[in-house]
Image 1 (cartoon, one colour):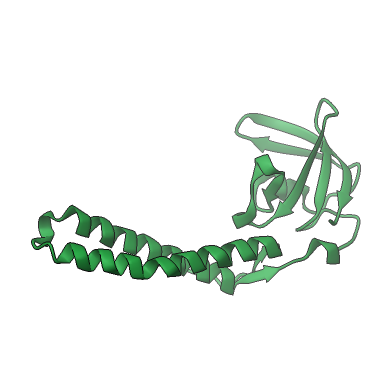
Image 2 (cartoon, helix red, strand yellow):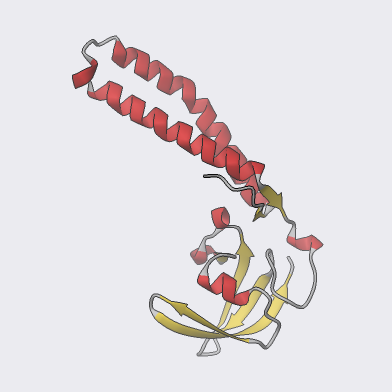
Length: 158
């Protein structure tokens, strides 16, 4: 069931979703043609091409519906327009881990998260622990590999 909650995201995430939606909508006619061609082969009960095309059509329609829902609830936020001394959505945070090794993350929306790329969702355990923190605050996060401890070194809006 869809909710009416706003979905914060950066412009880049919004553009990526829009491009993916356009690609899926462009694929629709190809799938319809594949279904028609498979249907022409006769007996549908044993027609693998027909069933595969129908399944792909269902996947595309579900994805289109999901992306349209996300885009309709999107609240695009530009980090450059933000400021303050607390970690909020869009902020880029430099943390020091237990070995005083710096780690940098940007707090982003769920669809944009890529931890290896330095982007974590505001809904992730670390993202939730960071929201509202200030420079020099200590952060404890429980993750599957155990408890982690960080210190907020710097907050930027870039």
